[in-house]
Image (cartoon, rainbow, N blue to C red):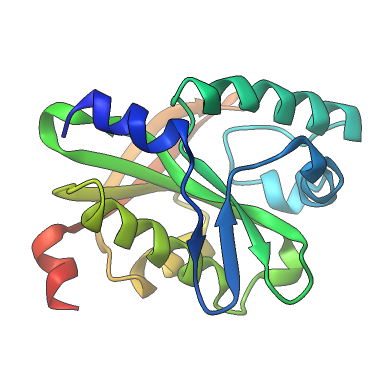
Length: 191
């Protein structure tokens, strides 16, 4: 995979559709919806970023992302509930390794949508996009050891748990153990 492919693909963020969701470029108009979940401690508990202190913070963050999108350097979709039109989270690629044709994915969702199959539905769309359009060989995801809910999402989409790295990341002032799950193109093709 070439860096030019990533730039071309993400500088004009494609829209993805699933049964219940639309995955699209984030907009400054999403500030209230983003703040609705990003302000919550239960959402950010297992994430590398802290809660948003106010809606202005969410708005400024979304403004910043517009430049990253324009430069083809941001790979996250806003996830919209088709029924309500509400942006309920984000899902996408956090990084690419072009030399090895692999990528890492990440996601966050409003707690009102936890346990309803929304996260696996969105993650599957990203995995499909990665293998079909970007021709990736490997897609992986990482999670804090305590986050069993995220591990279940990864397993539901066909990823295999590969193990833990003890105290591998310093997050919010403490070292945390990080688990990794992954799926290979050949495994995805068999599903």
